[in-house]
Structure formats: C-alpha cells, structure tokens
Length: 304
Image (cartoon, rainbow, N blue to C red):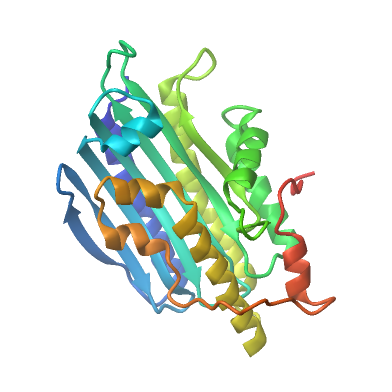
C-alpha cells in the first residue's frame, strides 16, 4: 500500500526533474526557490522563473499540507472529518513568444482518515495537463493530444476519451462561451477499483507529470524562432486576459488554496505577467485571430 509520504517524495522528485529541464530549454533564466510553511500544517517549495529567453514567467510548485479542513470544503466534499492531507505539483508557463503556447500541468493527491460515513480512508488522485495557445496551430494541437492519448492508453483505454471530455467541460470560460485553450486531459477523485490498483493510479499520475517536459519541449522548439508582429504580441496579451479570467473565476485549485489558507503568492503564481482587456474586440474576418477563436470550443477530435 503506497503511503502519502511516498507520494509526496515522488512528487518532489518530479518537481526537480521539470525545473532542471525547463532551465535547459530556456537556456538563460534559472528558478528561484522559496520554502514556505502553512499555518495549520505542512508547506511547500515555490519555484519561479522569470525573464528568460523563452519563458517570461513560469512557476513549478510543490506542496504537502495537512491539518483541519475548513467547513466550506467539508460541505463541498460531503465529508464529516476535519483532518486532511494533500500533496501535489502545479505548473504554469507563460512564454514570451506569441506563437509558443501557455501550458498548465497539475498532479495531486488528497487523503482523509476513515469517518462515520465510511470505515475506509477517503483518498484520491487528480490532475491533468492542458494547452492554451495564443494562436491555435492545428498540427501542434494534434501532436499534443496524441501524446496525451499515448500516456493514457498505457493505463486504460477509456482514460483519454473520458478525461479529454472532462477537460473540455472544465476549461470552459462560461461567461465568454469559449474554451480557455485546446483542452487536454483532466481527472479528479480517481480511486482504486476492480480494474486499477492504487499503484496503477499513482503510476498514471506520475506518467502525466513526466509527459510535460517532452511535450512542451517539442512545442517550444517548433515555434520559438518564428518572427512575430506587434499585432500578434497584442493578441497574446489579450488571450492572457482570458487565462486570468478563468483562473480567478472558475479554477478549483485557486479556490482550494484560498479556502485552506494557502500561500497567496503560490496560489496566484498562475497569473500572467501582463494581460490586456480590449473592449468589445472582434477579430478581422479571415485573420489568424478569427481562426483561433473558431477553434476555442468543446468537442474537437484532435487525434482522429
């Protein structure tokens, strides 16, 4: 039986691997680390990289926190226990180049002891990886989704279609009637069952984490040397505004961090360094911006 300590240690290692690989990919900037303690129990390592050759701002956070679960979360999780443990790695990268996409990845584990509602501990894994291109390049989108499907298919044939649909629904900016990007995979409350052991699910979680670097390295290298215009840079800032709207209004991780008295700088690490909001913007007919807007919708089959 895997323990929460083993899970946290493996997640720390994944944070180390990803930071080292991102520094090599950027070729200029290095991560700065802050160790922090959570009032109530636990803490983490926040690592931020800024003003690099490729990455304008990025964060790779690890946390392992425990203590008393706030009443609001007890109600939303439908549990009667107070004690909890949660650990995970969360990544957001905002590139300088408008043709290089924003990427987000998260893997996490949550545990509570047995309660009057169940004689077994309540535990699950969650996470996912999704891509937010400023400009949707269809060949890149197909590559991204095929790599995620390969990762999922190693563990269960239903994972990719199930988690891809979940991502389409989750990463939707409802008040804009558009998706945040081209989705990816998203899963939550994934627990052992007749087909999958806890070890299987933990290995899947780690595989998602380790898919991040080869996928993002390929996408960066495909696009980092393209020329771009001031108009394309302004469009990048506008798309970052949509990213910020989603994270502040809908993102479950942001809400969990705020409601569990997490470290605010780490919680809001995902915010872009600069974003614009243009009033009542409409892209020019036939433009790359209009093409991208037409692809920010649910249900696109990127692997077919």
